[in-house]
Length: 91
Image (cartoon, rainbow, N blue to C red):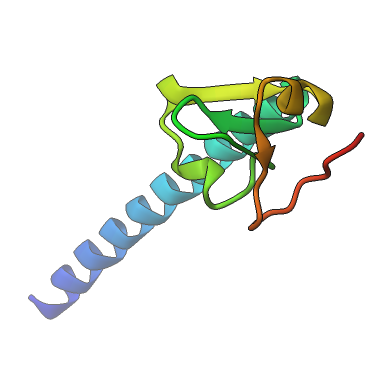
């Protein structure tokens, strides 16, 4: 009985590991594809622009995400640089 339970646990752990690995790969591809389209992001609900990898940018809801190809574009739209990730204020 003990061996059967161990095998069951091992199978379950393997399944979880595979799901996590696949999720990480998918998220990596999404992040890379987003990074190619724009350099900076902001939120329609704030006036800050960030690197896409910034902890605050990642909390932005998809429907509020504003994308910028340059700092000039962000500044012209009235956004200011995030003080956490510190994106440049000039290109």
